Image 1 (cartoon, rainbow, N blue to C red):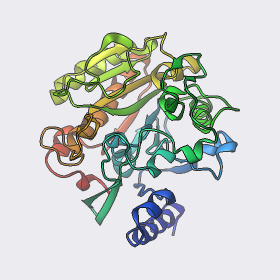
Image 2: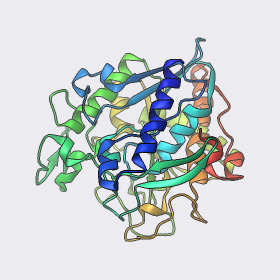
Image 3: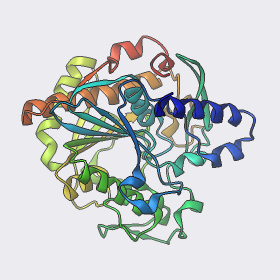
Image 4: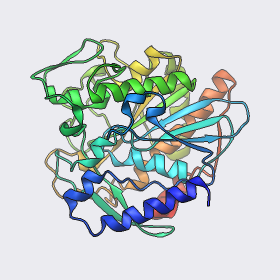
Length: 364
């Protein structure tokens, strides 16, 4: 039995035990069901890049799909916010199906693992969602936007000045991973998590990254990210935000994306005055071209208590996951054309295939 098989068996046992536990006990165990596919060549911890994370609830799994052949190295980031399900599931679909034949793919499905331990505080969306996978019943986790206060190691300030010097009026945002980049080695737990991701990008010489997020659906008027204002973009869903160095790659990717999927996305350049976000700070701190994508999640609609985050008729999970994965594929293609470094991924589902049935058909 190899290491990945043993990990799969362990997770299955833990998942079975979780069914017997009350919700509060389950969420604090932070046992996340990840079932690596045949294309995964290595599995590490984020603490391998920043040891202070070891044995904390901020440490998380990092998966490598390495072709052993020359090409681009890319990072797929899911689960920055625990209540943005499609990002994590897109990462799971990638690492459970893909085989890389040139270059290298690095996948973090649950980037802020601590946020997965909490129930959604925005709309009280349920924490466990049953699906039928290729191997039977499986639960997908829906968490909260921010790090668990119990894991932060510091009380929320009245206002939060992040490592880049930007001041956010809501002190709770000190626990929002996507406001704390590039992080601090001696900072709060969330700042240390951001610092560790930058350390990974640097050490692995990542060429481009995609941080996959979700926002409210386009048919709602109110924005869900109260502090987010750069670009004057009134509709955050179906947006690709690009570091200034990545604008050309992003533009070509979106053209191919619309032709491929008929999904029209807006391109927004990182606002250099608004510090702390991954799409700006990863690119500023490293040579990586950093991008952030937003899909429409009914669970993000303010005050919608009955949101169906799996099979909503207008914005099903298959659509949202398909958007992120096809966008990633087109970013890889555009990067290869622009820099002559290819990342070739086989068995990454097509958008049309995902839309033809339930998400569980692409999960182990």
